[in-house]
Image 1 (tube, rainbow, N blue to C red):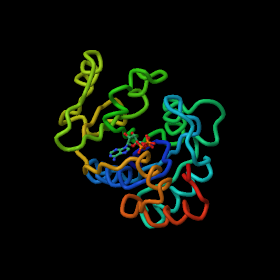
Image 2: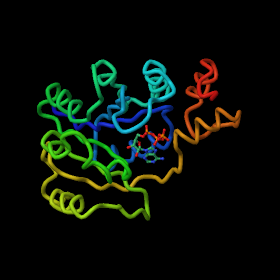
Image 3: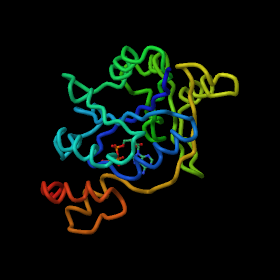
Image 4: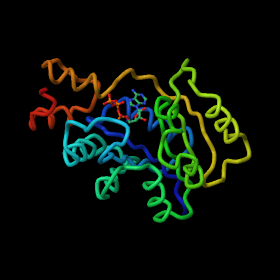
Length: 210
Ligand code: ATP
């Protein structure tokens, strides 16, 4: 039986409910069987994470230990060189040749997707889900808007494995890892922004003090 697989990448420095709840919203709305959470090793578009790859991986494992829909997937940490999404999709496609794959992106990531390595090949390997927060308008350049409209989901193309852009409304949670790291560094209480088990681990390891 082929399974529908969501793919959610990020630095996850640390993982928080602003990642997890929207991902689950997408799984429910598109009927996904699993969501692979894929921490990136060397993000090409941003500065180095504060936690090590192993620490980010452990935080992810703790965060989803009671949520069987989520799979922690360390394939980008195992690879040499930059973390390019196209390579990750290629490796998932080889592993799951017949599964619909759904690359899940926040609107911020989607708005600069045209700067990504081999961005115009992404839809050959997977669908793209744009996670929209309610009342949010998507900021797009003219060429991105054209690409978006060309591939936008319409009824009747539900059974394809790749090639469709799915906008999905998700729960609005104004939570960011930046704010959480700031709270830790200021000895403020980050509870209810991220799982307790992750907070405990951060405390034990003394992460985000600076
Ligand atoms: P930082 O504050 O360090 O930039 P972050 O909280 O944005 O981190 P990332 O790991 O960079 O987390 O995010 C991974 C993905 O999750 C991105 O596609 C981003 O758009 C999305 N995302 C992050 N926070 C939220 C949120 N609160 N609601 C919806 N999507 C989110």
